[in-house]
Length: 410
Image (tube, rainbow, N blue to C red; front, top):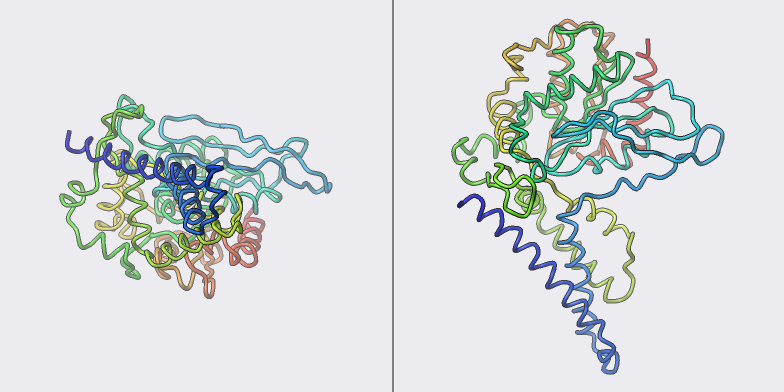
């Protein structure tokens, strides 16, 4: 019950702050308040507006918000977001463009399961959709998955990717962003051993911790500084009675969010203070830069305890991918068995999550792959977010990735 009480306490604090924000906003909106113009009341209403919006977003999965795409004919085409494969812990989603012939570039975008929804890659999807037949992994919030569905750890995650790749066929090109990079590499190696004809044509790994020890960061330092017992005791909770996954052990999204914010607390505090002042002056808008970023950033999801703990234990502490010792369903996965899948690693010079050196380690593990099938790009001045969704991605990295796909289209 201790674990469940902790989860419900966090949810109670969230809803309380949401209520306080809504109440303050309502008080500032009373018609009587307009009879006595007072900057303090305006500031109170602005604080309430920003606070209510922020805490309500923490419990809401963002919408993709992608309705149309411009085709080669210059016309807007409607986009249907269809579930191609439905599974308990995640779906394979297809962005199907109406009235457009299937694009020759068939791309599977592997989204992270590290506390945020797949919609974190919305801008990445928007940038690729005009040129690709695009699919994405859409992972589910663990709090909404009944305990009866069983466990979900790094091996299950890898097997999900194997199933998705087999479903899409061997003419796909896979792009893995951040957290899933090592497991996507393992899934490709699994196919190389188990079903070579089902391997993708190319694999692009963007800012992923293939070898976390290659370049230490705050993330890797934290993983080394705590024992697995300490981690389980302090980070794992049971889903409360409010959700379908009641009783399931999870690493709560709210806990992950507090960790994210604490890493740059001063920056976030300034951003929210500035937004409150803009709202008080009437300068804030529903889709301004602040709201556009934080509506997504604050929307967090729970991870299963097994996935979180096995990621820390096996990927960061045990370095099973980096040492080529990863085992899936009792079968050792040999990355050296990848012999005809072109592999590209992309890193950002100023990435403080997966520092330069961590992702490019994948190329050394691909001992069976000729140098002509390997590629690497280090983006100058780019941080972690910029290499898959920012200006660096749009202007530099995306064209390079598309060229890499075309070069290895078979």
